[in-house]
Length: 324
Image 1: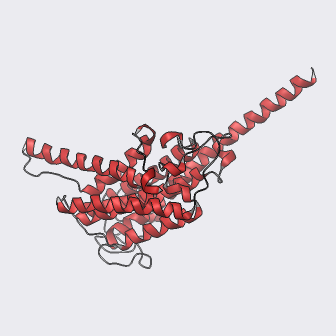
Image 2: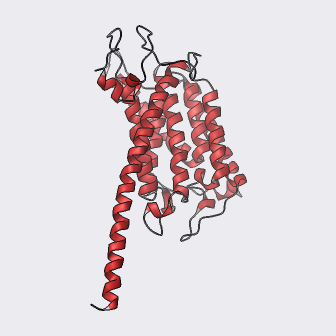
Image 3: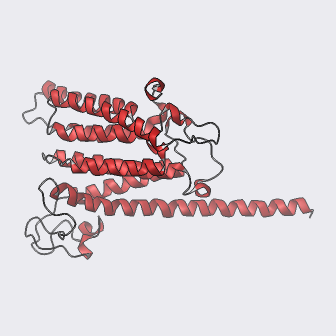
């Protein structure tokens, strides 16, 4: 055996070990994202129910809505607790709505999907080949790659958008402090990684492996422009008297504009309005006695998710003149 073949075998063994390690790490991190999402989903149930009703969130324990007895920690495990009890309270045996484990499952799947698509798959759905070139597997770049920050950024946005949508579907008005809290989190992300909220900005074009050195001021400009566009479209929703509380949709669009900029906000507004129009027209066409129309916030959440998972194939719009 010559020396070159000996080293080639060692190299093959090394790269196989790297592949196995990457696969194992992917499974572990996706499971971690799923479990973390389920826990946040459980907390979301509390927020959606208590915050619009001005009830305490952090200090009060979870309790059965029927008999009002406290739920034990073992019964309060996300998803599993509801399945163990077969959807009934341990004390009064009254049924507990299936919406609670469903929300936990939705948030869990959302977090796991965003981590998988954005981090593990190198942002395969992001626009214009953004960070399309990489040195190796995702694990070799983790956690330095800006895609990790962007995945956390979008988890926060999706979580708040879903919270506002669920509050709206309960026919409640969301307090503005939810939006303010989301804005503070965004600016914290922008201070950490200014590029996270500017994925489709002309300032954020990737040249080979070079990531543009954007400043916090650049991030603020793009966020403000997006927030203004969101406020305009949200105001149009109030004028058109969309179903449920139009103020919830206004908060969502401002958040979306600040987090992702004006282009995504425009596309999201068009998709959400079109979906709502289809529901209204179908109810009139089929002459339903009890027409079911979901509020605009739920349409906005679904539109945001659709764009995030198909962003690469959407038309590009150059806003360089506004960002000069």
